[in-house]
Length: 510
Ligand SMILES: Cc1cc2nc3c(=O)[nH]c(=O)nc-3n(C[C@H](O)[C@H](O)[C@H](O)COP(=O)(O)OP(=O)(O)OC[C@H]3O[C@@H](n4cnc5c(N)ncnc54)[C@H](O)[C@@H]3O)c2cc1C
Ligand code: FES
Image 1 (tube, rainbow, N blue to C red):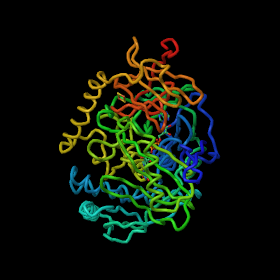
Image 2 (cartoon, helix red, strand yellow):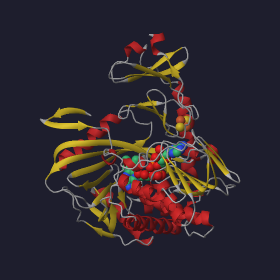
Image 3 (tube, rainbow, N blue to C red):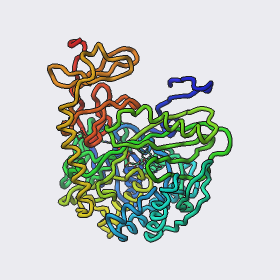
Image 4 (cartoon, protein in one colour):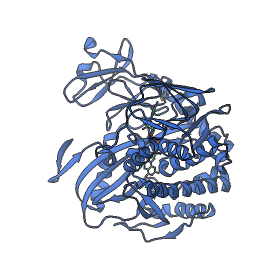
């Protein structure tokens, strides 16, 4: 944990999520022997654990496989608001899918919120869950129209949203949409509490167990490093779909956002709020900590990633009496081209393989509603949201956005070939920084760590070949095309890429 001084006040740059700082408590062993269960769920975030628990409650035996630790993915890196009011999502959905699409999303989101409250109570999970009002506010007068439109769209979709100009924030807002009785909680304690309820009575949770290959059939087979598991059904809840067979990468755009937590003197907001308009600020408190999120951008498309934390910190200090910034974290979430999540059968021909993704940074309610929907599909029950969230839907109104997404990838592929090298040799790379070096193998990304050790990798993304960019906040190589991320040594941090970057030897070329 690095500490620096700013205006006489110690400032911690922990680059670690507030929710992941405590010891995880219960842990589950990796899968080491072949087994057969009714359903394998791949991914131990909120989507996977909730799906697994609902399946188990329905009488199925379940294996929940998590590559790292339960809730260590995006679920552990959120602002942790569970709300059916979500920025200006209803006007966006109504514009693309009509009133019916917006009503289905509102109904499902409300069900997701209420299911979180019910599961926490039924399983006795101590996760600091609180009922809070949620606000979407206009920071400037010219954003007010979009808030009024959102309030109208949310009401038409069935939510009890009202307009107000009273928001519990220490600065003026032009107006806000308000929805009462939403939730905030500690997401990691919640997800781990659900995982504890999954384990046992013929069902298992396996951490440090990465699914390496999935074969749909009768039965389905999931290969992991230690064992193969067979099942009637497989659910892929790996955040970004881990298999390329549904061409999800062409329909999802990964967007990254940043959060800080700060200890502040004086009263903290007891409501959850988010601004609409060009600059997003997502605000809540947790005990004596203020949490501020925002500064989003398309993954791999921003050069000044580290400065984004400083911008959030400046905002917090401008409006609250901040004593110290205690945590900083960032994460990304896939946004579908047509603005509805993708939940259902993996491909049009799948009858045993399912997926849930594309939660647009609202996956705490979204992952929970996905679990409800997937349980219905696997049990053969009708579900009123299924057609709206079908991953294989075609959305004619959103075709231009789809074309734009894929044209952007084409441009990245061509444009990157013209991008100049940033250093002549690895010797020119300063400590703690990264540079693109052109050598006889093509473009090499060279990072010099704080100890002076050089790490060199090929800059061609192993997914489809776009050129990677360095993320100065996370010290990772990020792909602007579909959001894959790699550490300085080339290991995959996030997909759709599954293969590590080719390592190179910087010293040879100095
Ligand atoms: C900065 C930020 C703030 C956010 N704030 C909010 C908020 O306030 N409210 C809200 O509702 N949403 C919020 N979101 C969105 C929300 O956090 C996500 O949509 C949600 O957590 C996604 O959950 P998940 O279970 O689908 O994914 P994850 O939590 O990422 O879980 C997927 C898991 O799958 C595992 N995995 C991946 N590949 C494999 C494999 N091959 N084998 C086994 N396991 C694998 C990963 O290790 C990971 O643990 C925010 C997102 C960001 C980026
Ligand atoms: S993630 Fe698709 S090319 Fe990099």
